[in-house]
Length: 456
Ligand code: PLP
Image (tube, rainbow, N blue to C red; front, side, top):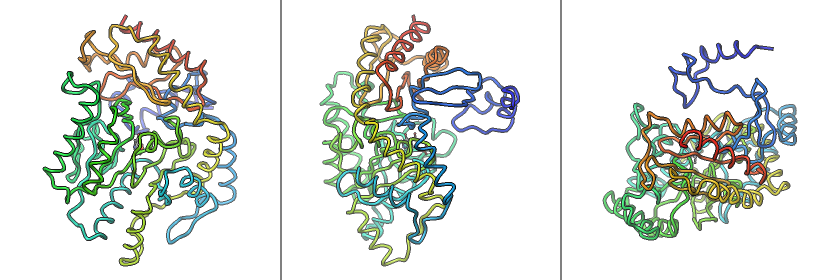
């Protein structure tokens, strides 16, 4: 077996990691973990350190690690048929079955799935579909896309442009034109602290109306948003937000793309996040929980009202000129089928509705009085702990002090993985949906100890 030293050497010298400080990693100053096995909510590294993964990888291992049913479905699929493409109407039992299972679970009218590999490419697909749709409808000017500051929609050219975090734009010449960013529905960090939640919702709606008026509704094709902001800080929307935004979009004939890469398949304690918030999307982006990351797979779930126009378009123009070699990859599809069966049979959506709010409540009980606490918020199996530099203010820490990364490191030393969220003073939690109350207690206990170690 390779030694850890050997692997670390190769890792520093040859592995170009995503979302990593490249120089520091190559110099050996910022080594990552080398994970070997995992089961349930726990991962184990090559040194035998077992850790509770309170972030489910990257909010994706919804059913938990090590489920043999999924491993066996993948192996059986690989033995029977590792690959065939899905161009020109081809399919496999797994991909067709998964399309049926996804649309059975999706909101009414969402009856078609275009499968991709990951969330970023699914959002690239979505924007192309929306442009195609407006060309078929004879509206060639209606092409701009509105997303929100602090939204996260991926790292591609378009999906990275839609993302509303400057870290993902800086030095990459992004965002591309045609992308506009509207107000982040981030009540805790609202500009006008005197506003109530309802007033802040009204402000977000007014800002959107103003942007649409300024640009012209006939130039705006779609609004893309996560039901709950994820990577931008785990931020549930303020009260009444989706009713207000949905009404504006309908009024101006602007499509709604609900990016449910995180919220899809149970994370909010409901199968999808859109119905939870009363959203009426035209397209839903899915990935992560679709296979619980046992294999890469994503999808664009398309409403009948959009699909009908697209189908008319291909009648008039020939086949859709948009496809990936790995669209609906049979191994991903087999993983998806087995994953969704387990999500149901283990009752994991209900467990998320039970244990998630428990985790948030216990976090409040343990840290609610801490002088550096800004806010503890959460919905379903998503919790955020936002810290402030000066008690009683909303002032952030000096980023150079790396306060939240230090807290995450102190937690890891105690055997719990949480995420220091980018561009914020937020510790994020998004555990597997199979989390138990006892495991939630461990997360809370370790968080409180780590916060005490770093901030007193
Ligand atoms: N959309 C959302 C809401 C996400 O959280 C992510 C990833 O975290 C993506 C899109 C991009 O997905 P991927 O990393 O699979 O490309």
